[in-house]
Each structure stands twice: as structure tokens, then as C-alpha cells.
Image 1 (cartoon, rainbow, N blue to C red):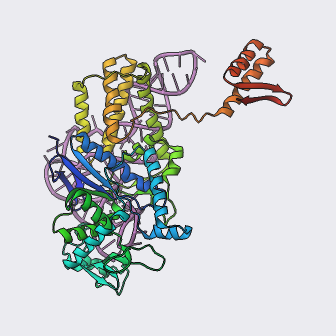
Image 2 (cartoon, rainbow, N blue to C red):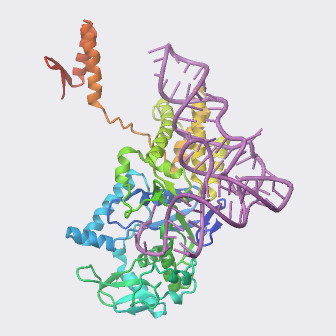
Length: 467
RNA sequence: GGCAACGUAGCCAAGGGGCCUAAGGCGGCGGUCUGCAAAAUCGCUAUUCGUGGGUUCAAAUCCCACCGUUGCCUCCA
């Protein structure tokens, strides 16, 4: 049915043909945020990119089941809860709600499932027990660790050699572990921490287990795509893979896709450097299309420098697209007629799909959209109605929705600069009054009165009130 | 120290052996349109792809070295 899609698989380190396990049905899992704060642009990149990728898969005919988790059991959340003196659930719930606001503003479609760790604790315990029974995990002083030495493929995903990593001396040494690389599956609760009852006493899940459990529960022991930021490759995804494959004895994720990091002045954006840029802040100055095309204008695997110059340039480019679409919508009074797909449209659609089929080359797809904008404007000026409709529909109703951009007419954010506007009007009127052009100056005052704005010529100058 | 990635016009960014005398966007310059602007549009804006070697009939694209930038190796999307 669909043409072959190639994606870069982190495990194989090369472009591979994408073939889902079940014909025509793609199951994908995207690592979501730990909700201890408002999300930042670094969180937004995978949301935007993989939402678009999911839409693309659907566009070419796949059924897609997508899962994106919320990690709601975590040190950072617990710390924040302790700081505020509230239960950890309150922090988690608060930032999930805030997540949806940002997500809604960015017009990111929700996944099919958004599981939370706290809803899967019993499944997590079951998973860990199974690993212990199979000899891949051991209990040590109420903690449970994964025995990395037992999983011979450990390091396969991140292309590391366990021996090299041990010598790398940056790994925390714990006398509870048999091997410094062993990672926590279950963590005994300390005083004042939330806990769940388990065969190993009161405790909580470790750092990587939740994604293994939730993906396996919702998508099966083996599924097609596991995605996330490339900073998760090690240790997070390496560990998820080890756990799941140890337990089930089969491939965990068939393909691994990782997006590059957002950078800020050449450095990775991160809390520790203090250069985070919250989505909440960003959206004050930029509309979703600007943010999304800015991100999609660079290949998803490359690092992306977030700069104001870059965003401002993108804003202008986006405006040009919106103005062109608006011209058409105004001409047809918002009822732009649909037309049958012409050969011209089919050709462009082919190109578009071709570009995205090679490791999701969104920059090339966006370049095609800009070409179409030029074509649209030219056709409009030449009154070539057929071509206007073709290009219009390609942008607004085919390509835009696939990438999650240009989906809606822009409500012009006329942040109504009322005061500045009134001052200009009053200046003009006062000039007219000086010239004794009372007919025009009264026209201004009377028509303003009609829309509820009253002008008052006081000794201190002209004042106005708005009803 | 170990393992990677990247370096293309003023800026952002595709291309990853011949279709490249290198897409697209922003900016700049000039023309059309306009009373003047704005918008739109047309043309120009890298003979060259970090530097130096090499492989090849052919390299921005492959190999080596060097310089530079960044990431991962600890929670991080």
C-alpha cells in the first residue's frame, strides 16, 4: 500500500526501511516529560516532531497507536512536593494540566494513551518479580537492581562497551550493587517519601522501569518505534531495552528514533546551566506556526539553536504563508471550494511524501510549501483560479495538517494598541481643528461616539473615555 | 579519559559520488506594481561547500590528518 519509508535507527546507526510488525499498523512510544514544572522548548521538540511524524504515517495510510507517558513518580517531583508541603500527586496533577495548556496552544494532537507511572505500580512490581525469577535482577537491602552483567547485549543501543564505562569512573559507586552499572528497578522509600507496598518492602519504582512497563502493557512486548530525545539513549533507553528484552526474550522496540537537542547560544539548554526557555514564555511572543515551522525547518536529528533572530525570521516567513492563504479565503468569503485532486496536486503530493519518506526530511517538505506559496501568489495575481485552488488546498488542507502547521486561519493578534491609536486620531483631529476644518473634526468625534468612544476637549488637552 | 555528531552564502538551513555552474527561509541590492508606501512579484546576492592531503573518469558528498563547535558517559526531551 504505502511507499517505503526510511528512518534512521539509533540501534543500527543507519537508515533502514521501515516495516511495522503488524502490516499497516504502527505502534509507537514517545518518552514524555517528568511533570515537575512547566515544559520547556526542549520538551516541545519531540512533541512537535513526533506528532508530525505520527500524522505523516497516518497520511500515507497507516493506522497508528501512539503512547506518550507522564512520569509522575520521580525525585524532582518529590522534592518539589516537599518544598511546598503538598502530596506529590498535587504537583503531578498541576503540571499535567499545565502540560495540556501548552500542548493545546501548540496544536499538538494528543497521543492515543497518556499513561502515568503511578497507575502502573502493580504492573511494575510484577515486572520486577519476573526479572528476579528469571535471574536478571536481585534484591539488595530492600532495593532491587538489574544485573547488567546478565544481559549480554547491554550497551548495544548506545554503542558503548560496559567495560569502558566502568573504567570511566563517573558512575556512582554503591556497595549495594554487584556491578557499578547495575541500575535501580525498585527503590526503598526513605523517611517522608511516598511509597507503595511491595515484596521488598515499602518503596517506589526506579528510574527506567515505568517506560518498559507502560509500553509493554499498552503496545505489547514488541512494538515498532520508540522515540525521544537523544539524551535519553543512555542510560534511559538502554536500560528500558535491557529490562524488557531480558524479561520477554524478544526485541523490545524494532526501531529507535531520537531527536537532537535544543541549544541556546551554542550550549545545550538545561536546568543546570539555567538557560531554559519555557514554552509558556515563548508563546507570549510567537504564534504556534512560527514555533513549529522553526523547529521543523531543521532536521529532527540535528541540534537546533534557539535564537530570537531565528524565530523572528521565521515569523516573517510564516506571515507570508498566512497572508497568501488569507487572500484566497477572503476572495471566497471563507468558503473556498474544494476541487478534485488534479495531476499537478498529485505530483506535489508525491514530492512531499518522497521528502518525508527519507528520514522525515521536514526542512525539504517546508521548502516545498514555500514554493507553493510563491506559486499561489503568482497564480492569484494572474487570476489563474485553478492554480490558486490547487496550491491553496495543498498548503492548507494537505501538507499543513500533516506537519501540524498552517491548519487554522490566523486570528490577527491585533493586540489592539488602543492608546497609541487614539493618540494618533486625536493628533489628526486637533490639526484639523487648528485649520478650522470642523466638519472633518466633528465627523471624527461623532463617529467615535457611535462606537462608544467619547472625546472631551478639556483645557488639559483632549481626553477620551471608552464605554 | 572513553564514545559520538557536526562545520554549506551576511544569518538560518537542505543536499550526503555525476541531475550541484548547491533547494528553501531571513536579510541586502535592483526592476514591476503604487500618488507615495505596504503587500505581492521578477532578477541579482556561495564557480563554491572548515583546512590540508588522498581515492575516483567524476567529491560538498567516500577515506586520512588537522583545526573548530557540540553532545553523551550523572537527572535531563
